[in-house]
Image 1 (spheres, rainbow, N blue to C red):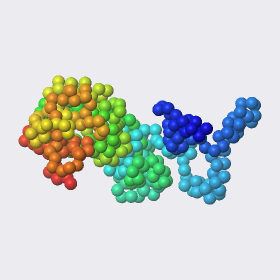
Image 2: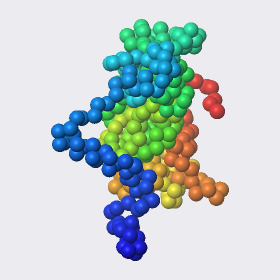
Image 3: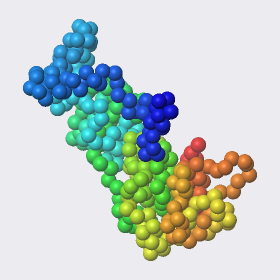
Image 4: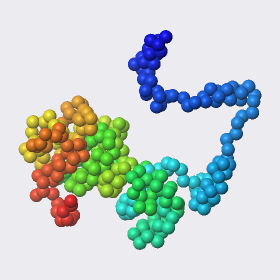
Length: 339
């Protein structure tokens, strides 16, 4: 009997282990009673009724009911859900950048008492001038919506991110030296945002990402890119290899970043029009995309650590491209040195 129980617990390869089931599939106590209640309803018995929101507040006691009333929580269609319908931008700087770039804003959620903030008041005024609906909510509700806990008293609900076409990126590149970052299924939102930020800083023409199995522009991307996603074309394409063919037709040389390359970036032909391919965090550049690369390069290394992550490597290579093309590129917008 004991052996039979052990074999039943192990199961086949398609079923989870007992430890896995205990955290995910194990039914709570009392499931038998729930089954019996269902049978009673099917047999014509009375269907149990769910308590109304007001009844649930009353059950929690007079303090909870009075606290909810004092907070003035919105009801009905104006109630603030746990997840908003559109994308979310949080923080004063990101909100100001969204307005400056003409990003579509559906609604602005402002913390109670924040309207008198000297830094936030002009943003609220600009939002109203742009026709966005401004709604005052308890700060606790913004805390619940915030991905990083740094909303600074304002959260914007926006429409879908306006991805560019690859043709837009190519058009922005013009005829001279240009850099396009091509991400072969980079999945981490933090890495994606950091790459977009570096690409915008060096003056890249755009970033190309896959439409599936890849990080997209989300609230995390807004934060990690410091708003750069609103100043740089980001093209979503169904096929990275085909996009590289289009870039080649536009005069780009395709450079793949790989730790297995024989040539370091200092010696690689990075002058001119370059499409820099960065592989995914776990697998690197896929075989089909690797076949499209005209040459490979890597960063020089003296230490013992295996390699930099994809965002750090992309930043280093992007700046090496800018250094190599500094004489042919237009004068920088600012001489300020970032740290």
